[in-house]
Image (tube, rainbow, N blue to C red):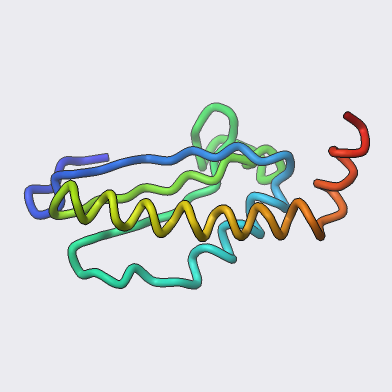
Length: 108
């Protein structure tokens, strides 16, 4: 990530999920909501275990990477707090309703 003088505060959140389908579903669910503040930028990517997008097979891209950039540290904190709440809802729905997640829980 390059330093941007307009958005000097940044954070990358890498969330490993069990399958590409779950990672892709989470990405689609989370990217629907645009950032409300013009002082915050957010981008998503699905990455493989080597953290690359290009060199990994689609099925190995199970890491949802969310990159935040903000004008102030406070704006970054507020945006990430909101994201974490949304992420909690998405993961909760997956845990309750998704067959793959339920299958993993039953195997434990």
